[in-house]
Length: 83
Image (cartoon, rainbow, N blue to C red; front, side, top):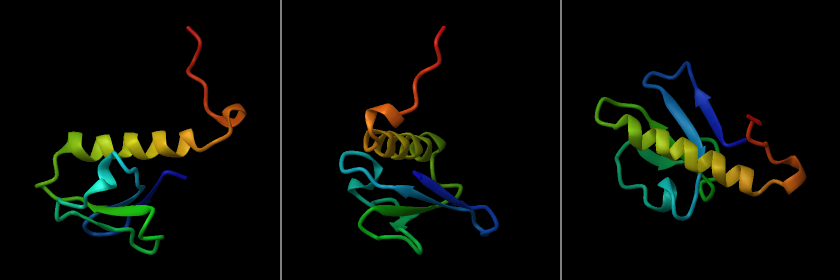
């Protein structure tokens, strides 16, 4: 699991697995806090607001996914579709 969405929260909250070099290295935006109801060392909670740029949180989702996939055994990693 790389993300957990609290879709009923107001405002909307998203928990993301952290990366060292990615979004969780620094919790500088006020919308980013230690993971709510999660291991605070490995998860961040992003609370959506008008001040949070879409490309920023979308990049965090990508980093979170890549981190989790990299930790899977090679045989279990998803493969890119064949063209």
